[in-house]
Image 1 (tube, rainbow, N blue to C red):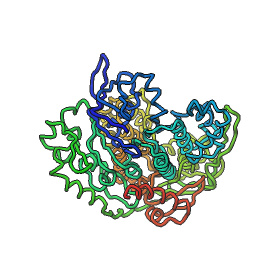
Image 2: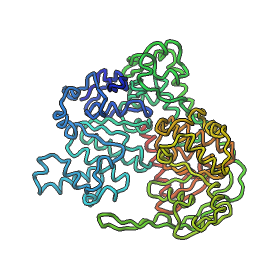
Image 3: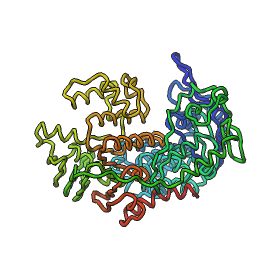
Length: 605
């Protein structure tokens, strides 16, 4: 159905001419699902955009892209409009990019339906309801606006729009990255069911190998703009034939067990043009030798349906297989540190949000319903629950960003239920005691300030001025970054590096409690491991307490000793992390655990 041969994408401007994606081959048969995986910067999304002719201005694609025999790269823009939507659909990570916020879901679907269907007015309502039912949405969603839907419902509506013209191929670009575990599982099963029912083909782009293994027939691994391995999903999971694929597998966090030391891929993905004449992964590879630095390895068939771009694959294949097998060994959780007195106590918190809109709709959401919890000195507490369960509302109340409607919050012995009532000295003490790291580090850093200025600003607040010059460098060193990063701005850093800066800024206050609100949700697997291991190290060195908020059970298994489960604003279960995850007693906890396990089980099968 679709084939790519030597697809190369260049940035071609008067100021620059460099390769971004180099010599990518791809073959997709009708009725199959292909996963394209790799870290940020590997060229996955650019490859997808080249297929449908949506490359940003200044980027030029060469090579061959053929869809059912037709050459897509040589088509005019007018001809491509007849392909997009009608024959090749696109589903993006953020459904808000596909749904008009000023338009009902039904109106959006009507726009995307074939013209012949739109002309038959009597059939339109029935057809919209049928399309919604296909993605498991009720008919009344048609009269609702995107902001009135949950994240999972928005993604289902976006999928219905992408399928409205019955394309033969769907390109899904990170469609589950921002979703909680239960919603992610639902969307993945939905994609697979629709694909099998329609007999269509799907390209699934993701940085999460578990997701790719759970639903894809074949997986293609990309790195620095090139394909480094291609294989059936089941075979690649059991026996990777490229060091990079193996590294990604080892960096995946298991949901079923604790890992004593998280596996990280050192360094970062290099720009494609800087490694165009050598093995792109050589600088991060434990098996690299002189040949790898002097020759660009071609993607060659190693075994039946197995392709690898590694010069040493014949020599190291057994080591790669053994490395993956050894990673399944169970680690003993270290003895929990001695705990002190209660540092944060929340008693009977309630919080209701009242909403209204430009369209006249009103409503209330009970975000917290009689929530009580305690965090003692030195412990790490996990807080899990799906989107809308109240996790972030608890964090915002503890940070003074929200006020609970009723209840009491005590921080370090100070009543911090309402920060407006605190004296200057008390507020300073509370804010110094509790700091936070949020999901999006770019949103929490001032893009106009250099890294050094942002950190210096916090150090000045803590020390009332008199900041020594070496203090910023020491702070950067504490999060594994060189002092030279002080001169950089956030836009010059990778996602993982920005999150390290956000952690450094929080640590500059020397907090006794660090609240981490989904700090790795937006990062790929290798960057996740780096940040989580850093947080572990900081906690060990400083004896700091932690409230770790996440929807990812594999992450919370590694980062907490005690676990609290939230559901619709209520605590439904809490206790030792391993006990709660291995032997849940509440139906909702069982649902979360089953959803996380289902993705893994499908990957194994």
